Amino acid sequence: MALRPVSRGAAGFLRVIGPSAIAYADLRGNRQYISLGNLTRNDRISLIIMNYALAQRLKIWGRVEVSEVPSSATDIWPATAERIITITIEAFDWNCPSHIPRRLTEEEFGGEIAVLREENNRLRRALSERQAGTE
Image 1 (cartoon, rainbow, N blue to C red):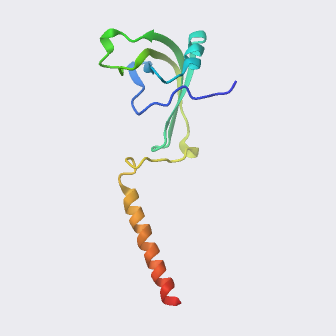
Image 2 (cartoon, rainbow, N blue to C red; image 1 turned 30 degrees about the vertical axis):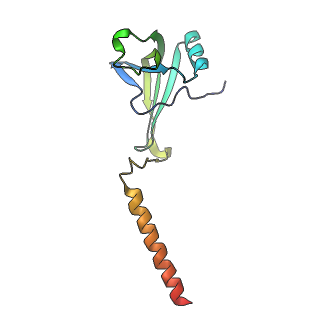
Image 3 (cartoon, rainbow, N blue to C red; image 1 turned 90 degrees about the vertical axis):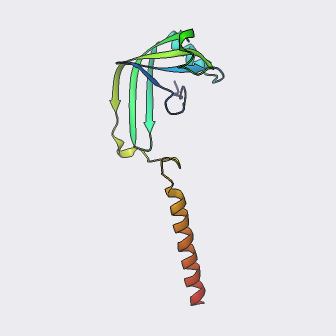
């Protein structure tokens, strides 16, 4: 059986709802019907949560409960939420970060990209001037 990601959500799409429970919204239009069908047949789930900026990987194993979005929770979950997927965590494991590549967004990099581009341009100009002077 091939493993495929169920969802890739924006930061904060997983919510802690108890000491050993997390949840996420099953959003209209994400077309994950296969995943939802699998979860209704077999309630076991595993998640691999990556934080490339900090080279962290968390594996979570648990059991799923699929429920409708309570009308009292419309301010908590997105308007497009069709169901809530609640995961009762049975086990978790932090992996060794030694083989996780560091990947940063421009925002996470803190504006350093512009500084590095300018440095790169300055070095290219200096190299061009040096090469022009030796010809």
